[in-house]
Length: 102
Image (cartoon, rainbow, N blue to C red):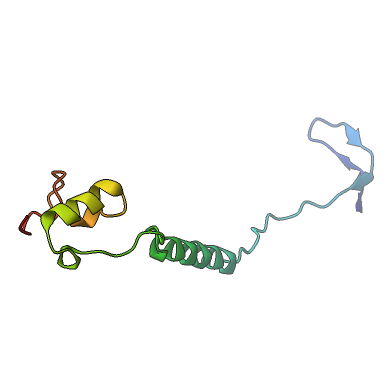
């Protein structure tokens, strides 16, 4: 705080001396961009981990049409668990391993 001396205004009135706080110039805060970069890197790494994780069921054995000797055998396996063996039905018409003979 500083003391301002008394003074006369233009209209002739006198203002007594008093204490005033000096006006401060506005100084914008310096922001660090390092925090933003770290946040972006963390989010990118989380997205890559999530996208690369294996979402398939581990309970399902990997079977292909070459594992079966006939279409009927492949169809019975397909009908037993359609969600596990959906790769046996290439055109999604409900018939497994159409290229095999009965």
